[in-house]
Length: 463
Ligand SMILES: [Zn+2]
Image (cartoon, rainbow, N blue to C red; front, side, top):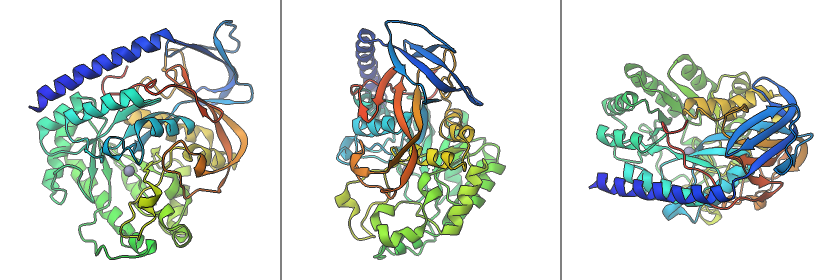
């Protein structure tokens, strides 16, 4: 039976964690970050940060502590480690596209110290047993903190079991359910949301209602496949789910919204939160003719006018979260006819440089950047000890060189997916060092931590 399988898997996880903890104990580092500009929640102040046993021990103008590893951070900005709540790190049978080692290396290189992985894998994360199995595999490979979303399932006992195993949300993928759930039936969704609400687990939604779509599967250009997923499907899905959500007490997080009108509707509902991606903020569908599969994702890129109004709304604080929707595939899979090419692009290594570029252009203020990439993600998914640089908080931080100019080059990605619709983009602002749980994981172009040095996060278990 599933429950006994889950128990065995849980025991294995406890043992594997113990092994990791002992190993960490032997090389337990203290780190002193000296003379950085430290984000205090409102502004930067000059000072030093001492991290001990994985947590911030002290922040002060001057800390003298010989004998600990010191990072000279003069001229660098220290931000709380970023949190990407929407990534597809694949692994298991899809490890040829990405695995927990390569995906979390990409996260660290991009300044992300925590990621939440999506459940549409092979096998899917659709039961407590499978969730625990993923946690065990990830514990051996991850170099950042990693937690997992699970598939929205119909049985309320299964929902309870997923929550107990630490699922961060139930993902409702409207275009094609990950686990059996009659997504055309409002009552079925309502029942699932009620069960989720009872155990205070959020539901994350891919909001495209394609049931009335004319999609024939015969489209042969990337413009056509994108056109077949019109903005009206998003509008319809958001309105429908807000209607259902209202009858329950469920917290709903709307993934990768592309329309200003969607952000406004979600903003008006106190229980829900919204997410936008860098590609929908910065790219429009006119790129499809030149970039083809490199710019193919779902929801697809929109018109220039729609993109501008999404960006403007985000810059004025209407969206809750920016997430990369990092969705790696091989180039062989992507470079096929439009109807066969799988949607999705990698984003972990481009998100922060792109957002820092907006900050340097005075379009995005750093306070909002930290909110969108760190504070709000932590709040929405209950990561209480993260997203702040203060005594006692987790030792997760990123040192950023705000002045450094660079150019996006996907051939240098740590992700296995070495392509990007942003290739060649000029950026200003780069990740210098990423520290996860008090350990240096990424430094000036290199991953310096070993596989498995990160932790597995479970909702409801974090301090
Ligand atoms: Zn996704």
